[in-house]
Length: 188
Ligand code: GLN
Image 1: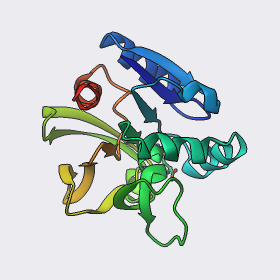
Image 2: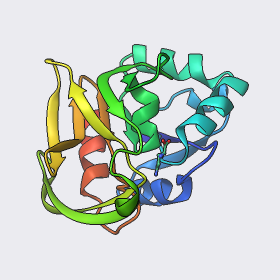
Image 3: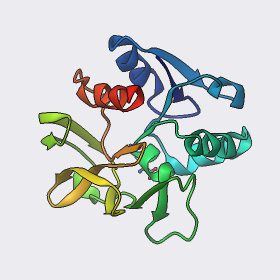
Image 4: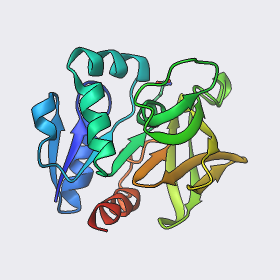
């Protein structure tokens, strides 16, 4: 299985090593051609506005939209979830707009800039170590989708169709279960 990691900015190497630990081939995606023959794509955390600008610059915005419309699974983590979302609170424009979720950026406030919490995640398991860094949260998930995890009543992981989004950074611990779930989505 070949899975891409959008490699314009953000936590790329950690996602790649997670994928390789699970036996998948990880491909750094920097240009449109890199998307060819991939089975899935991860959009990492970082700064969504910066990643968005770079995606436009390298024609990847439209190319990743086509990738999603072709039914290929996409995992968006933190900034990646913001990039996937159809709606961003307080903002008129979305970025990719592929996934029917609404997100709010920097949702946990200053005193909780970054923190770790052990969460149960549906289909993934109990006590998942979720690392939040200036994280967004998911305000709404379409009726067609599933809420997978909450932290203090806020939705922090969801799936809609072949899209998976989480507000935290699943690549920053040794726990491979969320990536494993994404690879299982690709297999099905
Ligand atoms: N706050 C960032 C944004 O709005 C996301 C932070 C992250 O990906 N760790 O894009």
